[in-house]
Length: 609
Image (cartoon, rainbow, N blue to C red; front, side):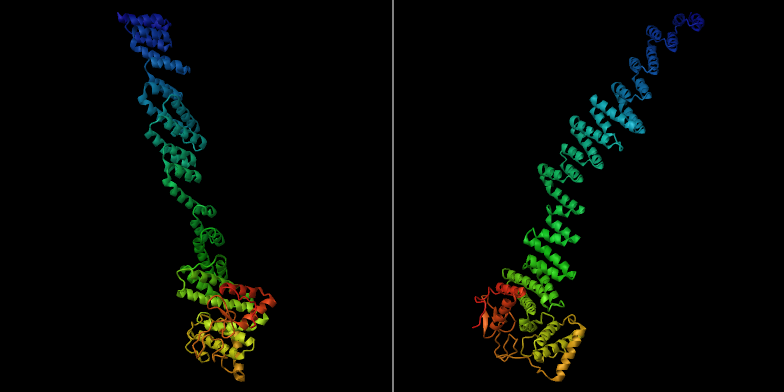
């Protein structure tokens, strides 16, 4: 009877007579209790024996119990074996997790319950993130294990999850390992996904070259180029474009230009885009550098920037410096430059204190630039145009001013200087009239030509009044009838002569007028015409102006090879003699210019016939 057997259990169990108790349990049909008795007393062999013989359902329980005990004793391999025999791998995973043996937990999970692996992996990653650096090391270790076991997808995912900002080197190493494994072992789509994930990450930590190399592995040429550009590795960017996809060469060049501009590296920009570099020099006000660089380019480029610089200088009131640029670089016959040339001319003829020997260089530079311009105009489509004729007039006027300045430095040429000032009066439709009449009057006064001095200075005073009134309506032209001094002239925009000088002239004119010691008539010559006039009153014959004085060339003349160029023999000889006796460099320069302008000098140095 089962009940009778159970009654005999108590004494046997109480006194540790487990074998007798086992027999009684089995007789009573309670073999499971016998198993549990042995489990409770950790007699694993006996428990296993009874379970296998009498209660197969308890075999697994015995193995689990043994495993739990083994885990507590840190006999992990033995415990794992028990649980696997019990077909309880989930418990092996659980126990390994409890002792933070994640790699073993993942190993068991992967092999026996793979459907739980992803969940376990996420759980592990969350745990490692909580633990910080040690956790990162765990991820790296797990990634290596995946890699070693051939689980490349999981290894890559693990490596990608390394985000340790305190250890950029480790992070980069893991990412590059992920890329390497992807390229070697994963399919094209997955590899592309990995590279497109890693590229921006590497760029963020400024590993541009590494990112570029990854993109190149996937033939992502544009992305690779952008990486090299981001890392300022311009030569690599250019080489990739040139060798792998020439369509991007212009793109790289453009980006490089922008970079150089933004960085202000103008000198480097010169070799890539000289126009952009020149424009940047202009923006920065580095004009000298701009012109120096432009001078190494073609003539057209040079003169574009010369014109810009000249315009800037004129606005700054530095016209003489502007003029010097054209002295250095020549004056091209560009129609767009015409207003610049005119402005330079007008600025200089309006400058004060230029009626001196010291002003020679300024006048000579203006003359030389205009001569160069006119020579260029002859060879251009503008030859013989109204503009060309206007510049020829400016050249003539500049030559007169330059020759006058040279003559002012030589005592024996005082009459030449005076004649030049008087000749300039026929150009008062271009040059400021008040200034011209003042200079002519003072020059005539200085050499004792009081009639002319009185008339010119009186006209000067009338012009000063007209400037104050803003019109020339009240001017009396009777003194200049039958001369080539123009009546229709522009009103000077300002008084060119200072107040105290004007008052001195008023006093002198009044004194001379009251003394009645001069005849208010301009001197005439053999033509019965005002002696400085090129146009004969009675015949209408137009004489050539002397290239030395501007006076009309009549009987005794020197002719030059160039048509329309002549000199009065007396004035020419006087000038040559002054050069010979004084060795004036300014007068020598005048002769040099005359030789160029007139097609050479006469064969004889002096002519006394």
